[in-house]
Image 1 (cartoon, rainbow, N blue to C red):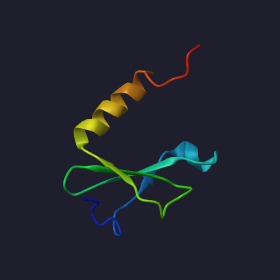
Image 2: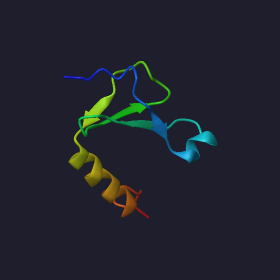
Image 3: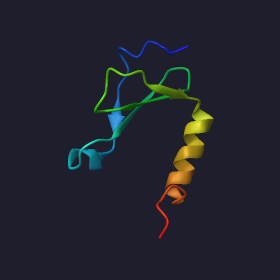
Image 4: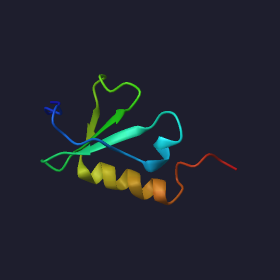
Amino acid sequence: MTPDLSKVAWRKASLSETANGCLEVALLDDGRVAIRDNEAPDSPPFVVTAHVWACFLDGAKNGEFDPPR
């Protein structure tokens, strides 16, 4: 079930101020994280648990999603 996100505070990376397109995240009261494309804010967001979000951030910080060189 998608929670009511009408009053959440969406945040985005500072790099998005100089580049087109980014993801926005909102930390929900129940510990989950909502994720949306800032170019389609009216589309349904993707909601994940705090654990899933932590795993994603860890992978991103460790370069696991970087393109092959």
